[in-house]
Length: 71
Image (cartoon, rainbow, N blue to C red; front, top):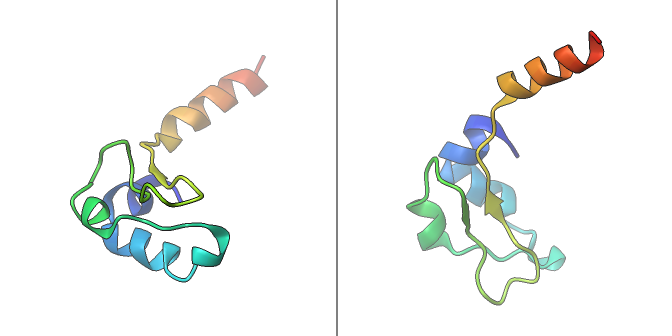
């Protein structure tokens, strides 16, 4: 999940990760609830899978790819 939904919506992160414990995903809900717009690992220490909030800039990536393709 990327962009505003992944970075700024603790509710959406919780909903998306809910029921994925069979994949080893276990998020720290307290950390998830207070993390907005920051890069942080919101997985519990015992989680087999890291769940990260990562800032994204889709506009910058589009510009970089456009420049690369125009060469």
